[in-house]
Length: 149
Image 1 (tube, helix red, strand yellow):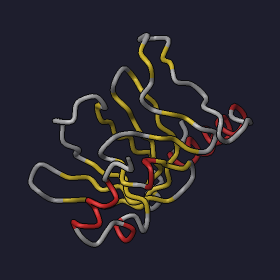
Image 2: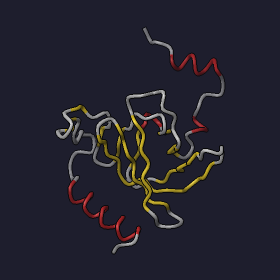
Image 3: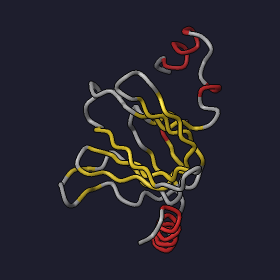
Image 4: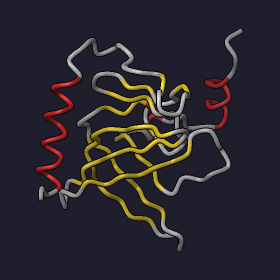
C-alpha cells in the first residue's frame, strides 16, 4: 500500500506521461459518461475551475503550485492547510479537487456543486497574494465590474 507521497509521485508520473501537449489547448470539454458539457476546463498544467470556493486570478489553479486550503467547520472554526494542487475532475455538476497536504503528506479531496450558487462553500482554495490583489474600495469594485460598452 502506498503512502500519500508515493501515491502523489505515482499520479504525478502518470499526469506527466499523459499530458504532453500545447499548454493552452483544452483537453476536454465534454463528459461522455453524463452527456453534459464540462464546466471545468483542463489545460496541460492548469485548470479553470468556476467554483466560488476557488480564490485565484481568473479561477485558474496551476498543477504543483502551492495554495492555502481553508476548511470551515460547522461550529464556525477554520482549519488552514498548506497544500500543493494536484488535479481536479468533474462528475456531473460536481467538481472535485485533489491536493497534497504538505505537512502530513496526506492527499485531500474537496468537492463542490457548480450549477447551484445557493450551496455555500465549506472550503476554499486560495492562491497566495490573492487577497492583496483585491480592490481596496467598493468604488474600485464597481469600476472594475462595469460593462465596457
